[in-house]
Image (cartoon, rainbow over all chains, first blue to last red; front, side, top):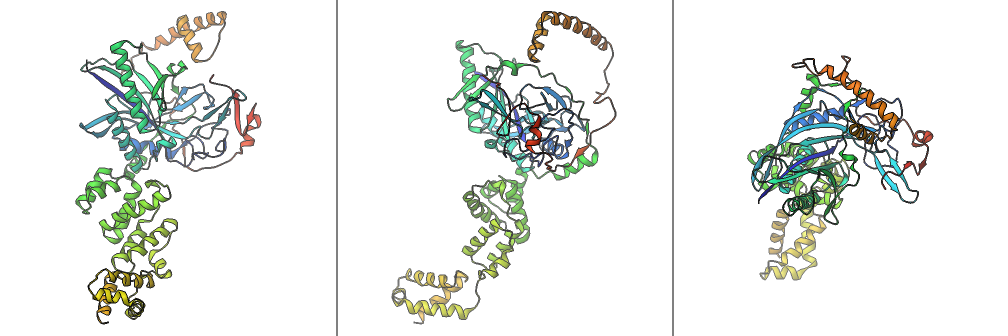
Amino acid sequence: MKYETVIGLEVHIELATESKIFCSCSAKFGGEQNDHVCPACAGMPGMLPIVNKRVVDLGMTAGMMLNCHINRTTTFDKKSYYYPDLPNAYQTTQWFAPVAVNGTVEIETSKGKKNVRIKQIHMEEDAGKLVHDDWTNTTLVDFNRTSVPLIEIVSQPDLSSAEEVVAYLERLRSLLRFAKVSDCRMEQGSMRCDVNLSVRPEGSDKLGIRTEMKNMNSISAITRAIEYEVARHIDAIENGTEELVQETRRWDDVKGKSYAMRNKETAGDYRYFPDPNVMPVVIDDEWYDGIKATLPEFPEVKRARYIDQLGLGEYDADQLVESRAFCDCFEEAYAVCGNAKEVANYLISDCMNLLNKKQMTVDMLTLEGKSLGELINLVTEGKVSRPNAKKILAVMFENDINPAEYAEKEGFIVSNDTGKIEKVIAEAIASDPKAVADFKGGKEKALMALFGKCMKELKGNCDPQTLREMLIDAVNKQ
Amino acid sequence: MDIATLKRLEKLNQLALTEEQEKAFLEFFSKKEKEAEALSEIDTENVERMVHVMPIMTVVREDKEIKNFTRDELQQSAPETTDGYWQVPRLVE
Protein backbone atom coordinates (compact mmCIF):
# COMPACT_ATOMS: atom_id res chain seq x y z
CA MET A 1 0.00 0.00 0.00
CA LYS A 2 1.14 3.56 -0.64
CA TYR A 3 1.11 6.05 2.18
CA GLU A 4 1.08 9.79 2.45
CA THR A 5 2.52 11.86 5.27
CA VAL A 6 0.67 14.75 6.90
CA ILE A 7 2.81 17.29 8.72
CA GLY A 8 1.97 20.49 10.57
CA LEU A 9 4.63 22.69 12.14
CA GLU A 10 4.76 24.94 15.16
CA VAL A 11 7.70 27.28 14.78
CA HIS A 12 8.92 29.42 17.67
CA ILE A 13 10.79 32.56 16.73
CA GLU A 14 12.64 34.71 19.26
CA LEU A 15 11.93 38.35 18.44
CA ALA A 16 14.65 40.94 17.83
CA THR A 17 13.91 43.15 20.85
CA GLU A 18 16.11 44.83 23.39
CA SER A 19 13.92 44.01 26.39
CA LYS A 20 11.58 41.22 27.51
CA ILE A 21 7.90 40.96 26.61
CA PHE A 22 6.36 42.06 29.94
CA CYS A 23 9.25 43.76 31.78
CA SER A 24 12.29 45.90 30.97
CA CYS A 25 14.96 43.25 31.59
CA SER A 26 17.48 42.59 28.84
CA ALA A 27 16.35 40.03 26.24
CA LYS A 28 19.93 39.32 25.13
CA PHE A 29 21.09 35.74 24.62
CA GLY A 30 23.45 34.43 27.33
CA GLY A 31 24.77 36.53 30.22
CA GLU A 32 25.63 35.52 33.79
CA GLN A 33 22.91 33.32 35.29
CA ASN A 34 19.96 35.34 36.62
CA ASP A 35 21.52 38.63 35.60
CA HIS A 36 18.63 39.64 33.27
CA VAL A 37 15.97 39.28 35.93
CA CYS A 38 13.56 41.48 37.92
CA PRO A 39 10.66 40.77 40.31
CA ALA A 40 8.22 40.54 37.36
CA CYS A 41 10.01 37.82 35.37
CA ALA A 42 11.03 36.05 38.60
CA GLY A 43 7.29 35.65 39.30
CA MET A 44 7.22 37.54 42.58
CA PRO A 45 3.76 38.17 44.03
CA GLY A 46 1.94 41.32 42.99
CA MET A 47 4.03 42.07 39.92
CA LEU A 48 2.08 43.18 36.86
CA PRO A 49 3.10 42.71 33.23
CA ILE A 50 3.42 45.73 30.91
CA VAL A 51 3.40 44.88 27.21
CA ASN A 52 6.47 45.77 25.14
CA LYS A 53 5.18 47.71 22.10
CA ARG A 54 7.96 46.39 19.87
CA VAL A 55 6.72 42.82 20.43
CA VAL A 56 3.32 43.75 19.03
CA ASP A 57 5.03 45.64 16.17
CA LEU A 58 7.02 42.53 15.24
CA GLY A 59 4.05 40.18 15.74
CA MET A 60 2.07 42.32 13.31
CA THR A 61 5.01 42.51 10.89
CA ALA A 62 5.35 38.72 10.87
CA GLY A 63 1.59 38.42 10.30
CA MET A 64 1.66 40.83 7.37
CA MET A 65 4.71 39.10 5.81
CA LEU A 66 2.79 35.79 5.93
CA ASN A 67 -0.42 37.29 4.45
CA CYS A 68 -2.37 36.96 7.69
CA HIS A 69 -5.41 38.81 8.94
CA ILE A 70 -4.34 41.01 11.88
CA ASN A 71 -6.67 40.91 14.88
CA ARG A 72 -7.05 44.58 15.73
CA THR A 73 -8.02 43.66 19.28
CA THR A 74 -5.61 41.03 20.48
CA THR A 75 -5.56 39.53 23.96
CA PHE A 76 -3.27 37.53 26.23
CA ASP A 77 -4.21 34.33 28.03
CA LYS A 78 -2.77 32.13 30.74
CA LYS A 79 -1.67 28.60 29.95
CA SER A 80 -1.15 26.32 32.95
CA TYR A 81 2.42 25.14 33.29
CA TYR A 82 4.11 23.51 36.25
CA TYR A 83 7.85 23.77 35.82
CA PRO A 84 10.00 26.28 37.69
CA ASP A 85 11.48 27.76 34.49
CA LEU A 86 8.23 29.78 34.37
CA PRO A 87 7.86 30.84 38.00
CA ASN A 88 4.26 32.10 37.69
CA ALA A 89 3.10 28.48 37.13
CA TYR A 90 1.56 29.66 33.87
CA GLN A 91 2.82 30.91 30.56
CA THR A 92 1.37 34.15 29.29
CA THR A 93 0.48 33.47 25.68
CA GLN A 94 -2.39 34.06 23.25
CA TRP A 95 -5.21 31.62 22.67
CA PHE A 96 -8.54 33.34 22.11
CA ALA A 97 -7.46 36.29 19.94
CA PRO A 98 -3.90 35.86 18.65
CA VAL A 99 -2.28 38.79 16.87
CA ALA A 100 -2.49 37.22 13.40
CA VAL A 101 -4.62 34.46 11.82
CA ASN A 102 -5.35 32.78 8.47
CA GLY A 103 -2.23 33.39 6.40
CA THR A 104 -0.42 31.63 3.58
CA VAL A 105 3.19 30.99 2.67
CA GLU A 106 4.17 29.94 -0.83
CA ILE A 107 6.91 27.32 -1.03
CA GLU A 108 8.73 25.79 -3.97
CA THR A 109 10.11 22.24 -4.13
CA SER A 110 11.12 19.80 -6.86
CA LYS A 111 7.38 19.11 -7.28
CA GLY A 112 6.57 22.76 -7.97
CA LYS A 113 4.87 25.55 -6.03
CA LYS A 114 2.46 25.06 -3.16
CA ASN A 115 0.66 27.23 -0.63
CA VAL A 116 0.97 26.33 3.03
CA ARG A 117 -1.82 27.77 5.17
CA ILE A 118 -0.95 29.51 8.43
CA LYS A 119 -3.49 28.91 11.19
CA GLN A 120 -2.24 31.62 13.52
CA ILE A 121 0.68 33.57 14.90
CA HIS A 122 0.65 34.27 18.61
CA MET A 123 2.91 36.25 20.93
CA GLU A 124 4.15 34.65 24.13
CA GLU A 125 6.94 34.48 26.68
CA ASP A 126 9.80 31.99 26.55
CA ALA A 127 10.66 29.75 29.53
CA GLY A 128 13.91 29.93 31.50
CA LYS A 129 16.66 27.35 31.71
CA LEU A 130 16.82 24.39 34.10
CA VAL A 131 20.06 22.65 35.01
CA HIS A 132 19.76 19.32 36.77
CA ASP A 133 22.49 18.95 39.37
CA ASP A 134 23.34 15.30 40.02
CA TRP A 135 25.69 16.10 42.87
CA THR A 136 23.10 17.75 45.11
CA ASN A 137 20.16 16.02 43.41
CA THR A 138 18.45 19.38 42.89
CA THR A 139 17.42 21.52 39.93
CA LEU A 140 19.06 24.90 39.34
CA VAL A 141 16.99 27.65 37.72
CA ASP A 142 18.17 30.50 35.51
CA PHE A 143 15.45 33.06 34.64
CA ASN A 144 17.46 35.01 32.04
CA ARG A 145 15.40 33.60 29.17
CA THR A 146 12.12 33.65 31.11
CA SER A 147 9.80 36.19 29.42
CA VAL A 148 12.03 36.73 26.39
CA PRO A 149 9.50 37.47 23.63
CA LEU A 150 8.55 34.80 21.12
CA ILE A 151 6.08 34.39 18.35
CA GLU A 152 4.75 30.95 17.54
CA ILE A 153 3.74 30.35 13.94
CA VAL A 154 1.26 27.49 13.65
CA SER A 155 0.74 25.99 10.21
CA GLN A 156 -2.17 23.87 9.04
CA PRO A 157 -1.25 20.21 8.34
CA ASP A 158 -0.46 21.06 4.71
CA LEU A 159 3.07 19.66 4.45
CA SER A 160 3.73 16.17 3.15
CA SER A 161 7.48 15.56 3.06
CA ALA A 162 10.80 16.50 4.64
CA GLU A 163 11.60 18.45 1.46
CA GLU A 164 8.47 20.57 1.87
CA VAL A 165 9.21 21.15 5.55
CA VAL A 166 12.71 22.37 4.71
CA ALA A 167 11.37 24.66 1.95
CA TYR A 168 8.75 26.04 4.37
CA LEU A 169 11.28 26.71 7.14
CA GLU A 170 13.71 28.36 4.74
CA ARG A 171 10.94 30.54 3.35
CA LEU A 172 9.86 31.59 6.87
CA ARG A 173 13.46 32.35 7.79
CA SER A 174 14.03 34.41 4.67
CA LEU A 175 10.82 36.46 5.08
CA LEU A 176 11.26 37.09 8.79
CA ARG A 177 14.93 38.01 8.48
CA PHE A 178 14.04 40.36 5.65
CA ALA A 179 11.46 42.07 7.82
CA LYS A 180 13.97 42.16 10.73
CA VAL A 181 11.54 40.26 12.96
CA SER A 182 14.29 37.90 14.16
CA ASP A 183 17.74 36.68 13.21
CA CYS A 184 16.18 33.16 13.03
CA ARG A 185 19.37 31.36 14.08
CA MET A 186 18.47 27.76 14.76
CA GLU A 187 21.85 26.97 16.33
CA GLN A 188 21.29 29.67 18.97
CA GLY A 189 17.70 28.65 19.51
CA SER A 190 16.13 31.81 18.10
CA MET A 191 14.18 29.55 15.70
CA ARG A 192 12.84 26.23 17.03
CA CYS A 193 10.39 23.83 15.56
CA ASP A 194 7.82 21.28 16.78
CA VAL A 195 6.88 18.71 14.14
CA ASN A 196 3.39 17.12 14.23
CA LEU A 197 3.29 14.11 11.98
CA SER A 198 0.92 11.34 10.96
CA VAL A 199 0.73 8.83 8.14
CA ARG A 200 -2.35 7.54 6.27
CA PRO A 201 -3.09 5.40 3.19
CA GLU A 202 -2.85 7.53 0.05
CA GLY A 203 -6.18 9.10 -0.85
CA SER A 204 -7.70 8.55 2.59
CA ASP A 205 -9.40 11.56 4.15
CA LYS A 206 -9.05 10.26 7.69
CA LEU A 207 -5.98 11.42 9.63
CA GLY A 208 -3.68 8.81 11.18
CA ILE A 209 -2.40 8.84 14.76
CA ARG A 210 -0.33 11.94 15.32
CA THR A 211 2.98 12.21 17.16
CA GLU A 212 4.79 15.41 18.05
CA MET A 213 8.53 16.00 18.16
CA LYS A 214 9.51 19.06 20.14
CA ASN A 215 12.26 21.66 19.94
CA MET A 216 14.02 20.54 16.81
CA ASN A 217 16.82 23.00 16.17
CA SER A 218 18.58 22.19 12.93
CA ILE A 219 17.23 21.69 9.44
CA SER A 220 19.25 18.53 8.87
CA ALA A 221 18.05 17.02 12.17
CA ILE A 222 14.45 17.83 11.24
CA THR A 223 14.89 16.04 7.90
CA ARG A 224 16.34 12.94 9.58
CA ALA A 225 13.67 12.95 12.31
CA ILE A 226 10.83 13.15 9.76
CA GLU A 227 12.27 10.33 7.66
CA TYR A 228 12.66 8.16 10.77
CA GLU A 229 9.16 8.88 12.06
CA VAL A 230 7.49 8.19 8.71
CA ALA A 231 9.26 4.82 8.49
CA ARG A 232 8.32 4.02 12.11
CA HIS A 233 4.65 4.86 11.53
CA ILE A 234 4.42 2.80 8.32
CA ASP A 235 6.19 -0.11 9.97
CA ALA A 236 3.72 0.01 12.86
CA ILE A 237 0.71 0.13 10.53
CA GLU A 238 1.89 -2.57 8.13
CA ASN A 239 3.75 -4.97 10.39
CA GLY A 240 2.24 -4.20 13.75
CA THR A 241 5.72 -3.67 15.23
CA GLU A 242 4.25 -1.39 17.88
CA GLU A 243 1.01 0.33 18.76
CA LEU A 244 0.98 3.96 17.67
CA VAL A 245 -0.23 6.35 20.34
CA GLN A 246 -0.72 10.08 20.33
CA GLU A 247 2.31 11.30 22.25
CA THR A 248 5.21 13.68 22.44
CA ARG A 249 8.53 12.25 21.35
CA ARG A 250 12.10 13.35 21.68
CA TRP A 251 14.48 13.11 18.74
CA ASP A 252 18.02 11.89 19.52
CA ASP A 253 20.02 13.06 16.54
CA VAL A 254 23.19 11.21 17.57
CA LYS A 255 21.45 7.82 17.78
CA GLY A 256 19.14 8.67 14.86
CA LYS A 257 16.04 7.56 16.82
CA SER A 258 12.99 9.10 18.42
CA TYR A 259 11.84 8.18 21.93
CA ALA A 260 8.55 8.59 23.75
CA MET A 261 8.97 11.18 26.47
CA ARG A 262 8.34 9.45 29.76
CA ASN A 263 6.57 12.41 31.26
CA LYS A 264 2.99 12.17 29.99
CA GLU A 265 1.99 15.47 31.54
CA THR A 266 2.57 17.17 28.22
CA ALA A 267 -0.59 15.40 27.07
CA GLY A 268 -2.57 17.38 29.65
CA ASP A 269 -4.93 20.14 28.74
CA TYR A 270 -3.58 23.57 29.39
CA ARG A 271 -6.81 25.13 30.64
CA TYR A 272 -6.30 28.44 28.88
CA PHE A 273 -8.13 31.40 30.32
CA PRO A 274 -7.91 35.16 29.71
CA ASP A 275 -5.09 36.78 31.66
CA PRO A 276 -6.79 39.39 33.83
CA ASN A 277 -3.45 41.15 34.36
CA VAL A 278 -3.02 42.23 30.74
CA MET A 279 -5.70 44.39 29.21
CA PRO A 280 -6.57 43.90 25.53
CA VAL A 281 -4.13 45.36 23.04
CA VAL A 282 -6.06 47.52 20.60
CA ILE A 283 -4.29 48.26 17.32
CA ASP A 284 -5.66 51.50 15.89
CA ASP A 285 -5.38 52.57 12.23
CA GLU A 286 -2.34 54.75 12.85
CA TRP A 287 -0.42 51.88 14.47
CA TYR A 288 -1.51 49.37 11.82
CA ASP A 289 -0.68 51.66 8.88
CA GLY A 290 2.65 52.60 10.45
CA ILE A 291 3.72 48.95 10.53
CA LYS A 292 2.35 48.30 7.04
CA ALA A 293 4.55 51.15 5.74
CA THR A 294 7.72 49.55 7.16
CA LEU A 295 7.28 46.21 5.36
CA PRO A 296 10.17 45.42 3.04
CA GLU A 297 9.89 44.44 -0.59
CA PHE A 298 9.69 40.61 -0.74
CA PRO A 299 13.02 38.92 -1.60
CA GLU A 300 11.75 37.61 -4.95
CA VAL A 301 10.47 41.06 -5.94
CA LYS A 302 13.88 42.53 -5.18
CA ARG A 303 15.56 39.72 -7.09
CA ALA A 304 13.46 40.38 -10.19
CA ARG A 305 14.13 44.12 -9.95
CA TYR A 306 17.89 43.59 -9.60
CA ILE A 307 17.91 41.42 -12.72
CA ASP A 308 15.42 43.31 -14.92
CA GLN A 309 16.17 46.90 -13.99
CA LEU A 310 19.75 46.89 -12.72
CA GLY A 311 21.10 44.26 -15.12
CA LEU A 312 22.54 41.86 -12.53
CA GLY A 313 23.02 38.19 -13.35
CA GLU A 314 20.85 35.58 -11.63
CA TYR A 315 23.73 34.34 -9.47
CA ASP A 316 24.52 37.82 -8.15
CA ALA A 317 20.85 38.58 -7.47
CA ASP A 318 20.38 35.27 -5.63
CA GLN A 319 23.40 35.94 -3.44
CA LEU A 320 22.25 39.45 -2.53
CA VAL A 321 18.67 38.56 -1.60
CA GLU A 322 19.95 35.98 0.88
CA SER A 323 20.19 38.81 3.36
CA ARG A 324 18.40 42.07 4.04
CA ALA A 325 21.68 43.61 5.24
CA PHE A 326 23.27 42.87 1.85
CA CYS A 327 20.27 44.29 -0.03
CA ASP A 328 20.23 47.48 2.05
CA CYS A 329 23.97 47.99 1.60
CA PHE A 330 23.71 47.19 -2.12
CA GLU A 331 20.90 49.68 -2.67
CA GLU A 332 22.60 52.48 -0.74
CA ALA A 333 25.89 51.94 -2.57
CA TYR A 334 24.13 51.77 -5.93
CA ALA A 335 22.41 55.09 -5.22
CA VAL A 336 25.86 56.68 -4.80
CA CYS A 337 27.84 55.07 -7.64
CA GLY A 338 25.20 53.82 -10.10
CA ASN A 339 27.26 50.73 -10.88
CA ALA A 340 25.24 47.67 -9.85
CA LYS A 341 27.70 45.05 -11.08
CA GLU A 342 30.65 46.61 -9.23
CA VAL A 343 28.67 46.86 -5.98
CA ALA A 344 27.51 43.27 -6.29
CA ASN A 345 31.09 42.08 -6.88
CA TYR A 346 32.43 43.91 -3.86
CA LEU A 347 29.65 42.56 -1.63
CA ILE A 348 29.60 38.99 -2.88
CA SER A 349 33.33 38.38 -3.05
CA ASP A 350 35.27 40.90 -0.93
CA CYS A 351 32.75 41.58 1.82
CA MET A 352 31.82 37.90 2.04
CA ASN A 353 35.51 37.01 2.48
CA LEU A 354 35.88 39.60 5.23
CA LEU A 355 32.74 38.30 6.98
CA ASN A 356 33.98 34.72 6.77
CA LYS A 357 37.36 35.67 8.20
CA LYS A 358 35.62 37.25 11.16
CA GLN A 359 33.20 34.31 11.45
CA MET A 360 30.29 36.69 11.04
CA THR A 361 27.01 35.94 9.25
CA VAL A 362 25.75 38.06 6.35
CA ASP A 363 23.14 39.66 8.58
CA MET A 364 25.91 41.05 10.77
CA LEU A 365 27.18 43.27 7.94
CA THR A 366 27.35 46.84 9.24
CA LEU A 367 29.21 48.38 6.30
CA GLU A 368 27.76 51.74 5.24
CA GLY A 369 26.38 51.41 1.72
CA LYS A 370 27.13 55.08 1.06
CA SER A 371 30.83 54.60 1.88
CA LEU A 372 31.02 51.50 -0.32
CA GLY A 373 29.53 53.52 -3.19
CA GLU A 374 32.13 56.25 -2.65
CA LEU A 375 34.95 53.70 -2.64
CA ILE A 376 33.69 52.22 -5.91
CA ASN A 377 33.62 55.72 -7.41
CA LEU A 378 37.28 56.17 -6.46
CA VAL A 379 38.10 52.89 -8.22
CA THR A 380 36.09 53.49 -11.39
CA GLU A 381 37.42 57.04 -11.70
CA GLY A 382 40.94 55.58 -11.55
CA LYS A 383 41.83 57.41 -8.34
CA VAL A 384 42.49 54.28 -6.28
CA SER A 385 43.85 50.97 -7.58
CA ARG A 386 41.82 47.80 -7.04
CA PRO A 387 44.33 46.16 -4.66
CA ASN A 388 44.42 49.33 -2.55
CA ALA A 389 40.62 49.54 -2.61
CA LYS A 390 40.56 46.09 -0.97
CA LYS A 391 42.84 47.37 1.79
CA ILE A 392 40.57 50.37 2.34
CA LEU A 393 37.49 48.11 2.42
CA ALA A 394 39.05 46.00 5.17
CA VAL A 395 39.51 49.17 7.26
CA MET A 396 35.94 50.27 6.48
CA PHE A 397 34.77 46.98 7.99
CA GLU A 398 36.34 47.93 11.31
CA ASN A 399 35.81 51.69 11.44
CA ASP A 400 33.43 54.26 10.09
CA ILE A 401 35.81 56.08 7.72
CA ASN A 402 35.41 58.31 4.69
CA PRO A 403 37.17 56.31 1.95
CA ALA A 404 38.39 59.40 0.01
CA GLU A 405 39.90 61.03 3.10
CA TYR A 406 41.44 57.76 4.21
CA ALA A 407 42.97 57.10 0.76
CA GLU A 408 44.45 60.61 0.75
CA LYS A 409 45.85 60.23 4.27
CA GLU A 410 47.40 56.81 3.63
CA GLY A 411 48.85 57.75 0.24
CA PHE A 412 46.52 55.47 -1.71
CA ILE A 413 45.55 58.04 -4.32
CA VAL A 414 46.82 57.05 -7.77
CA SER A 415 49.66 59.27 -8.83
CA ASN A 416 49.23 61.32 -11.97
CA ASP A 417 52.71 62.65 -11.45
CA THR A 418 54.32 61.40 -14.68
CA GLY A 419 57.69 62.81 -13.60
CA LYS A 420 57.65 60.49 -10.59
CA ILE A 421 56.57 57.50 -12.69
CA GLU A 422 59.34 58.20 -15.24
CA LYS A 423 61.90 58.36 -12.45
CA VAL A 424 60.75 55.02 -11.00
CA ILE A 425 60.83 53.42 -14.48
CA ALA A 426 64.35 54.70 -15.12
CA GLU A 427 65.55 53.23 -11.82
CA ALA A 428 63.90 49.87 -12.55
CA ILE A 429 65.49 49.70 -16.01
CA ALA A 430 68.92 50.61 -14.64
CA SER A 431 68.69 47.92 -11.92
CA ASP A 432 67.75 45.06 -14.28
CA PRO A 433 69.47 45.29 -17.70
CA LYS A 434 68.87 41.55 -18.27
CA ALA A 435 65.07 41.99 -18.19
CA VAL A 436 65.38 44.87 -20.64
CA ALA A 437 67.50 42.76 -22.99
CA ASP A 438 65.15 39.74 -22.66
CA PHE A 439 62.10 41.83 -23.48
CA LYS A 440 63.79 43.38 -26.48
CA GLY A 441 64.83 39.88 -27.52
CA GLY A 442 61.15 38.88 -27.69
CA LYS A 443 60.46 37.58 -24.18
CA GLU A 444 57.23 39.40 -23.37
CA LYS A 445 57.18 38.00 -19.86
CA ALA A 446 60.35 39.81 -18.90
CA LEU A 447 58.36 43.01 -18.79
CA MET A 448 56.39 41.74 -15.78
CA ALA A 449 59.50 41.79 -13.58
CA LEU A 450 60.06 45.46 -14.38
CA PHE A 451 56.36 46.25 -14.07
CA GLY A 452 56.21 44.63 -10.64
CA LYS A 453 59.23 46.58 -9.43
CA CYS A 454 57.71 49.87 -10.54
CA MET A 455 54.30 49.09 -9.00
CA LYS A 456 55.95 48.18 -5.71
CA GLU A 457 57.95 51.39 -5.70
CA LEU A 458 54.78 53.38 -6.46
CA LYS A 459 52.91 51.48 -3.69
CA GLY A 460 50.30 50.45 -6.23
CA ASN A 461 49.15 54.01 -6.71
CA CYS A 462 49.34 54.07 -10.44
CA ASP A 463 46.95 53.22 -13.22
CA PRO A 464 48.32 49.86 -14.45
CA GLN A 465 47.53 50.62 -18.11
CA THR A 466 49.38 53.95 -18.01
CA LEU A 467 52.37 52.40 -16.26
CA ARG A 468 52.52 49.55 -18.78
CA GLU A 469 52.46 51.90 -21.76
CA MET A 470 55.10 54.22 -20.28
CA LEU A 471 57.29 51.24 -19.37
CA ILE A 472 57.19 49.69 -22.87
CA ASP A 473 57.95 53.08 -24.30
CA ALA A 474 60.97 53.54 -22.02
CA VAL A 475 62.36 50.02 -22.61
CA ASN A 476 62.06 50.39 -26.36
CA LYS A 477 64.05 53.62 -26.19
CA GLN A 478 66.97 51.79 -24.55
CA MET B 1 -18.41 15.70 36.78
CA ASP B 2 -17.39 12.13 37.54
CA ILE B 3 -14.58 10.69 39.64
CA ALA B 4 -12.40 9.99 36.55
CA THR B 5 -12.54 13.64 35.48
CA LEU B 6 -11.78 14.77 39.01
CA LYS B 7 -8.80 12.40 39.21
CA ARG B 8 -7.51 13.83 35.94
CA LEU B 9 -7.87 17.38 37.26
CA GLU B 10 -6.06 16.35 40.43
CA LYS B 11 -3.18 15.05 38.36
CA LEU B 12 -3.02 18.14 36.14
CA ASN B 13 -3.04 20.42 39.19
CA GLN B 14 -0.60 18.20 41.06
CA LEU B 15 -3.00 17.78 43.97
CA ALA B 16 -3.62 14.73 46.15
CA LEU B 17 -7.13 14.95 47.63
CA THR B 18 -8.46 12.76 50.39
CA GLU B 19 -11.61 10.71 49.73
CA GLU B 20 -13.61 13.13 51.81
CA GLN B 21 -12.29 16.11 49.87
CA GLU B 22 -13.01 14.33 46.59
CA LYS B 23 -16.61 13.79 47.65
CA ALA B 24 -16.97 17.44 48.59
CA PHE B 25 -15.43 18.60 45.29
CA LEU B 26 -17.67 16.30 43.27
CA GLU B 27 -20.75 17.80 44.92
CA PHE B 28 -19.42 21.32 44.46
CA PHE B 29 -18.57 20.84 40.80
CA SER B 30 -21.86 19.10 40.01
CA LYS B 31 -23.73 22.11 41.37
CA LYS B 32 -21.52 24.58 39.48
CA GLU B 33 -21.90 22.59 36.29
CA LYS B 34 -25.67 22.93 36.47
CA GLU B 35 -25.36 26.68 37.03
CA ALA B 36 -23.03 26.97 34.05
CA GLU B 37 -25.40 24.93 31.87
CA ALA B 38 -28.06 27.58 32.42
CA LEU B 39 -25.89 29.94 30.35
CA SER B 40 -26.22 27.77 27.26
CA GLU B 41 -29.93 28.66 27.10
CA ILE B 42 -28.97 32.19 26.10
CA ASP B 43 -28.78 32.84 22.37
CA THR B 44 -25.26 34.19 21.69
CA GLU B 45 -25.49 34.07 17.91
CA ASN B 46 -24.08 37.31 16.40
CA VAL B 47 -22.82 38.53 19.76
CA GLU B 48 -19.24 39.76 19.59
CA ARG B 49 -16.85 38.10 22.02
CA MET B 50 -16.28 40.18 25.12
CA VAL B 51 -12.55 40.56 25.52
CA HIS B 52 -12.64 42.25 28.88
CA VAL B 53 -15.24 43.20 31.46
CA MET B 54 -14.12 46.83 31.46
CA PRO B 55 -14.00 48.92 28.28
CA ILE B 56 -10.28 49.55 28.68
CA MET B 57 -7.20 48.67 26.72
CA THR B 58 -3.64 48.10 27.72
CA VAL B 59 -0.88 50.67 27.78
CA VAL B 60 2.32 49.61 26.09
CA ARG B 61 5.89 50.56 26.90
CA GLU B 62 8.79 51.36 24.59
CA ASP B 63 11.33 48.59 24.01
CA LYS B 64 14.07 49.86 26.31
CA GLU B 65 16.29 47.80 28.57
CA ILE B 66 16.36 48.93 32.21
CA LYS B 67 18.09 47.11 35.05
CA ASN B 68 16.54 48.01 38.40
CA PHE B 69 17.55 45.06 40.57
CA THR B 70 20.69 43.09 41.31
CA ARG B 71 20.63 39.33 41.50
CA ASP B 72 21.52 39.41 45.19
CA GLU B 73 18.56 41.66 45.98
CA LEU B 74 16.21 39.34 44.11
CA GLN B 75 17.50 36.22 45.80
CA GLN B 76 17.27 37.58 49.34
CA SER B 77 13.99 35.76 49.94
CA ALA B 78 14.96 32.58 48.06
CA PRO B 79 14.95 29.45 50.25
CA GLU B 80 18.04 28.08 48.49
CA THR B 81 20.52 29.43 45.94
CA THR B 82 23.74 28.12 44.40
CA ASP B 83 26.16 30.11 42.23
CA GLY B 84 23.46 32.64 41.44
CA TYR B 85 20.87 29.99 40.55
CA TRP B 86 17.61 29.49 42.38
CA GLN B 87 17.81 25.95 43.70
CA VAL B 88 14.67 23.79 43.79
CA PRO B 89 13.81 20.13 44.42
CA ARG B 90 14.84 17.93 41.51
CA LEU B 91 12.25 17.80 38.76
CA VAL B 92 13.16 14.98 36.44
CA GLU B 93 14.33 11.64 37.75
